[in-house]
Length: 165
Image (spheres, rainbow, N blue to C red):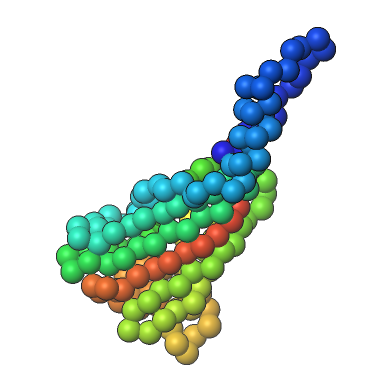
């Protein structure tokens, strides 16, 4: 991954190893594979339990910009808890007074298009969807909002934001 460039000093001998580390490796990280992470799934009420479901995440960090994807795939014995759902970020968001948005998709009986919301300085994100097919107001996703999830249903979220470091 990209990191802070080296500060060179007068009279320093530049070696092939330093050039590789500071230039080649930094440049190559822009084209590297994404890094997998396991997001935590929490709620404002009773905790959900994945059981035979899966929750996967992956991200790429370029400088302080994070590109990430999270996929929740529901299993037969997944329980959904109570209250609004949150998912952990791969890196804490910057405290910039700025909230980031991304896109989300819930696939159940119907397909719902929503958005990802990341607050300034947050370590989690929420997904919001319209509250019903006839109401365009949105609410944080939970069991029953906007749909009741069951086996083979899923939520996919893709977003980018500025990391704290």
